[in-house]
Each structure stands twice: as C-alpha cells, then as structure tokens.
Length: 214
Length: 211
Image 1 (cartoon, each protein chain N blue to C red):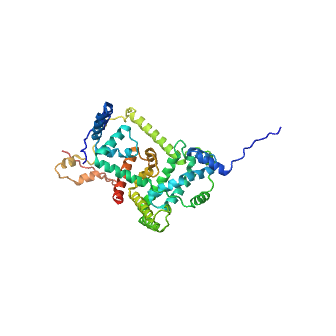
Image 2: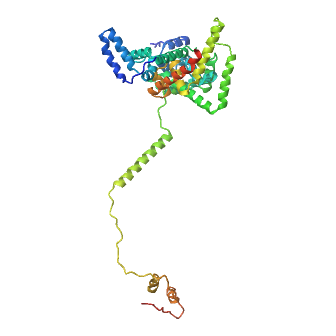
Image 3: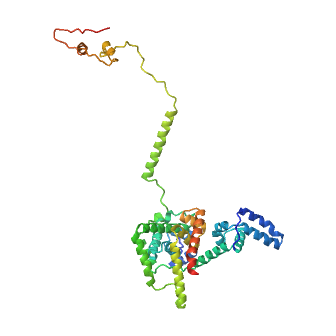
C-alpha cells in the first residue's frame, strides 16, 4: 500500500544530513522521514537524472528511499529501467559493404575541393546584398537624424505679406435690392438688374441702368 | 660545399592511417585541413556506423538512412573549412545528421506515398536473411530475440519525432544532455523534459508486451 505523499519543500531533506550523525536508529528513522518528505511528483520530476545517476548524493539517497517505500513509484522505476535495458542492448546495424565505394564515387563526382578552401579559409568579403543593406541602413539612419533635428529645431517666425486695408468693393452681383430680397426667399430678378450685369455696348448708344435704391 | 638536404621519407599510407587512428577528432580534422586526404577517410570510418544507427532509428528506413549518412559526409567534406575548431566535431556532425533526418521526416509527412513505400519496404525486410543473430543459438531463442528486437524497434518508431530523437541520442548514442541540447538546438530543460516523456512513453508501450 503506497504511502500518501506529503507536499513538503525538498529543501527539508537537507536537514536530514545533520541527524545522520546521531546513531544508527535515529539515522534510519531520519532517512525514512526524509524519504516520506519526497512526494511522488518530485520523484517523477527527478527520475531522468536518477536513472542516469546524475543527482547529488543526498538526492539519490532520498530517491532510493522513496522508491522502497512507495510501491507505485517503485513499479514506475522498475518499468523504466527494464525498458531502457532493452533499448540499450539493441544490436548496432552496420553500413552495407559498398558504402565507402559509393561515397568515394560521389566525392569524385564533386571534383577536387579547392586547396585554398581546405588550407586557408577564404577571407570574408561582404556580398553585394550585404553592402546594399548596409547602405540602406546608413541612409535610413541619416534620414532619421535629419528629421529629428528638424523636429527639435525651434520654429522660425512666419513672415506674412503685409496686410493693407482696402475699401470693400461689393461684388457686382450683390446689388442692394437683390441682397434685400434674398432673406424673404423671393429673389427679384428685375430685367434691369440683369441688364446691369450684362452691359451691352451698342455702337452709338449707352444704356444707363436705373438703380433701385431704398 | 654541396648542401645536402635531408629529406624525410614520407610515411606509407597504412602507417599514416594507423597514426591517425590514435588521434582525437580535432587532430584528425586539422590533418585533413592541412592537406592529408586520408584523414577524411578516418573520420568516415569513425562515424559511419554511429550516424547510420542514429538516422536509421530516427527515420526507420535503412536504405534512406544510408543515403542520408552519405549526404552528411558530403556536407562535411564541402564545409569543413568553415567548421569552428573550438567546438566538438562530433556535435557538428550529429547536428548535420539530425537536420537531414528531420527534413526527411518532414518530407514524408507531406507525401503519403513515400510513407507507404517506406512501410512496405520494412515489411519486405522479413524476407531478408538474418544478419546479426547467432546461428548456433537455439531456434526458439533466435525467434525470441528477433521478436524482441523488432518489438523494441517498432516501439522506438512509435515515439513522437522530437522525443524519439532525444531518446535515440541518449539511449543509443550515449550523448550527454548538453550535447543533445547543442545537436537539437534546444535548451537543457527541454532536453530533460523530452527525455522524461520519451522514457515514460516507451515503457508504457513496451512493458505490457514483454510481461
């Protein structure tokens, strides 16, 4: 019957090391206390390193004790180790007899690798694309620098053209009578107004418009 | 006064190979880069079996695995002058192999016909004569061993791709967690997590079948 696991911080295990010097009986008791302190979750999480013998001695001891007390973890431990034994005893497969001959044939097809490549590696020269990327990067940085300078430059005073007061000249079409009639919604289009907007020049006659004033 | 140049007689090829066999990978690589072509053959001999087993266990197709191993060596031959000699040669070679295996699996998943032909090719393997069995052993022992080997290989092949690669590198190639992290381009925590899941999955599949 499996011992119910206690959820205790694993650092408590370190306290056991002092108790071990107090005699064999208390040593056995403290070891069982320590292994009880390790719960199954901790056992499973450290099981990889436990199987590979990569845990510190104190933790290895705690894991072994837990495996002797907890039947579930003990079965898990046995299953893993037994299956790994099968894998590790798999026979190795060997290359086919003509493997080297085929490889040499392929290497010959490749042709001799340049001795320069073999003996002295080529010096690193940036490719065209690398150079283009570098130039683009420098241009981008320069543009950003200019824009940043402009952004932080204090604004210059705006110089506008001098304002000159001039008499308001009503639009020719804005005749007083027309303007007066608009709010009423009844625009008046006396023929004389139209005549006034379209001066007609006859050969010998000048029309004089009649101005309607209030 | 005649100048006498003392020339050292060049070592015969066999002696050179014998000497290279005792050197570590870094020294052999340096010898190759220094112009000793036989050094490359030494690298091929050292790694051909290990790479074949790694790629075969990863992709499950022996013929294709051999092609990919050849491709690994072609790439090593072409690019070894760019290899960073401060790093381990083994890690570099396994990284190339791992990437080729991953590409092969990716191509297969896109082409169901290739996948079917691979599976069918594996069925035909049953007709091939046994290669690695002790012919003096009892027939029932031979059958049991063959069955067990096939069972293990099938179970490895059933693991998810990411878990399988880490599993094979650790359990069959004996690579450390750090080397596996370099080869698969993952962090250490991911390697341990995948290995844990791979082991759990492998055990859960195979345990009921061997009891």
